Length: 494
Image 1 (tube, rainbow, N blue to C red):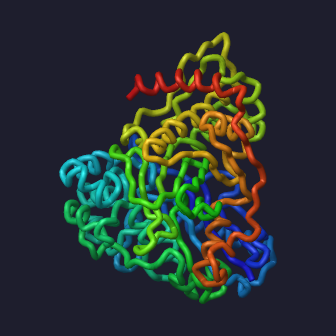
Image 2 (cartoon, helix red, strand yellow; image 1 turned 120 degrees about the vertical axis):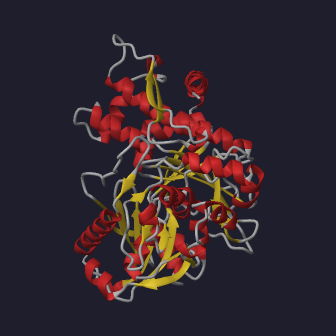
Image 3 (cartoon, rainbow, N blue to C red; image 1 turned 120 degrees about the horizontal axis):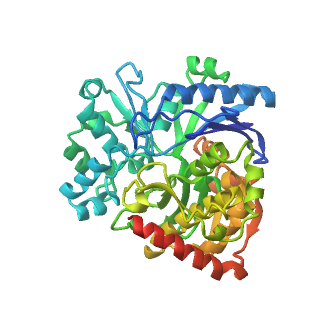
């Protein structure tokens, strides 16, 4: 038997076919294969994608999976979905998309969320939703209501990106408590939809999807979807989660005190807590974790830096002169720690939550034309990303979350020896890398939801630690000096 997991990201759709007994990955593919999915930015701070592009690339990834594996589709018993968090997809009564999705890094609704935070009351927002409304999904829907009233009048349901993918597969519109929490649409105190936010924004509660458990049979592939995907009609969709809670699941990070990290398009550190704790300035955000239930709540505290892999991609396409990422990583090591005084502030992918929704952009500092070369820029980029993540980790430390060991997939920027060693040394944490990624995690989640794995721990057969990186003691003091210089530049910009 096999499980099929999809990780519907910003740059690509990744699909993984997992063997249920061994837990081994049979095939794992990305679509698009070479390029990245387009982000539409009509105005500064905007970021949109066409949901049809997600579906087209998901179909293409499935075709490659089936072609390469030669697996009989009837042997694929369940499907799991991971997706980019905080986005908005709106459809009419015929389930047709009304406008491009406003995705996670779009910051147009930040002022709307700030005003809601002040008008509703800061303490009330934090006590009930554990967050500011910010530029999350609820505020994005309010923006459509205010600025595109003709479109808003046709809205039948508002969904997250993963809810849209599940709808395309099953013709059923539903969501999860975890999903509602990431849109600031779940009231933890009242244990229901966040009427506080909906009433303030004057959004009809009927626009929200019905709630289903994260791990459960949430629908079955329709005949039409099965034909498009090349899969068997009736195959169950039995798991969905936002990408960062799902990344934690993929690493078996489910219990209080455990911490996961990811460095894809955005960079994330995600710690698990047992109590509804929050940062009073909402610089890091608390959501319902994948194994959250009303009777046994588990909370995920999320630190996000928008411009992580996005900065590395920009460097690749702008200055790397045809090098691939491996070559870039090797060249970056030729520059010394601190890049001879060159600093990069990596916040160039929209408003940053750890900066209280400020959009200060990315910037290069102390560039000396007679000293600095390509390798300095590449190293300063990776160091700047690590410093930004450490800045957020210090906020999490203030909430009582101590990063002693951090688990991450052996993928994305953690493939860079320089990045992972710098991250361990600057954070002071031991970094454990695993043969895991989001699509494999979604497949494991599908197995749990479909009841194929009788106990949750059974789903992690085949999960292996591939590397352990200890902080480099001889470099701690030097990195502390460089980080202090980087922090001074950042504080001058805030």
